[in-house]
Image: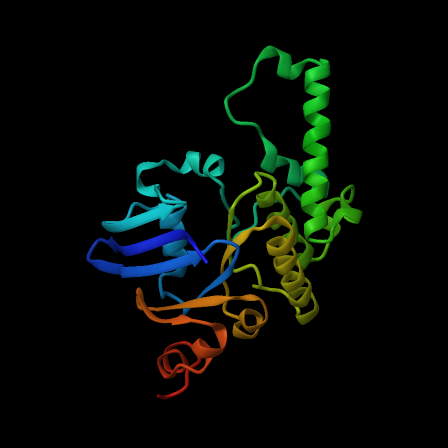
Length: 254
């Protein structure tokens, strides 16, 4: 498969501390790619580099052959990159649908016509609602569209955040710890949703998780970081049995 995302020699330093040291990673188009490692390994830092939140000291980032380092963070949605974060940013008093619609706030500013009940505005609102409901269907939550988020289980909230990220119709979806806090049933449902997104939308997914069993079920390839460096990269089965991974991540002596 062709690489959609290419990470080459990415190095990040915070003061005198090296957070990432020459990281290389290729994410194939249409794949589910896992990123794992112990706490402090540099996983979220790498996502923040790809998401243009952090500027690396060295290295190359390419998306679809285009130099990402030449693009600001606010350009990423138009390029086809979307993400979720570890800390959920949802409005408890609003409905599920209203929260997802936040992901569809149109770029390019507003005109007076956007605030008047014109046929154009009504058509855009209908289009946005259809897009949001389709995104909720991808995570199997469309039946809760008009429920208030504050009344729903935590696992639902994680999926709603994913649905919101889908609204920009990305080619690459980055998920930061989507399995954190989920019970086994919710994790199974998330796995089904991730596979569905890949199969029905042709989506490429890059996800961080500490749950190796989840990756064994959903990932095509896994990259393992430890102390800011790649220590393994391959299929989930191969990575799971790698001695360096077991020592660094699973706490098993080599």
